[in-house]
Length: 366
Image: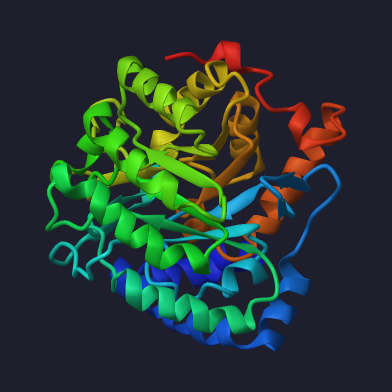
């Protein structure tokens, strides 16, 4: 399936404007998501797991360590289809309390020579209330997989008012999801990444944590361009407020160190894909070495194959997620990643993925 996609389907898709293809794929998958029979058929073709890959964390069952990152399904258009392609969970959003159109088009560009994208959506979504209703409706056809909802600050809201805005989204969306992710690091919105600073982050956590009456896992998503001092502040707050996991890391706004070669490398927005993987892995390693087993790590950034995923697991990630690798390699790629992961774990004589986490962390520092 992956070869067919890369040889036949992707070249056709890449003839068209990226956002058009993105929307077309989501339209198709939205119909797919509503049909249990189609989902069941796709799952039979795409699924792979083994005892080495299964995990139970926070009381939740992850049939494999690979999830869909936020940004692919902003409005829960295809929330049930992702599990059919063997994603263990799908991260929906990011979602803001207020509906917003995002930045002007064009706002998505491919970087084929770099196996990446430039993303400048600006948190476009239909708002927390509308998406919560859609998730409630989609749940009727849900047969497997987990949902993580990513929430973000509405663009019209100041950083000083961010805590109340996040709280509104949390209350609206929490009943419809298994996991809540607080996104602090969208590089496509002015001043948004400043929410990672302790001055703004702590009030958000103080406001949101008491609302978590059902004790669902809360993840924090952080950026790719953080200093050691910024990471130390985040780690301190994660431990203080008993945050379940840190998602590392988001798109990279900085480009000087990426050595990009593709045509649209200078377009505005954040860069995804292979080029950001080394820095993401360094951040994962740093988070792991300072975790004291107080939180988990979700590795994201530049995963295209099982070896890429294994690099993040060895650096300290308990779970991994991707979008760009899925766009470049197609719906069969998750099965291929999990098969490769299983072989690598077996080769290293690990009976379970937990034995691999962090074994190379000391080699990868900021």
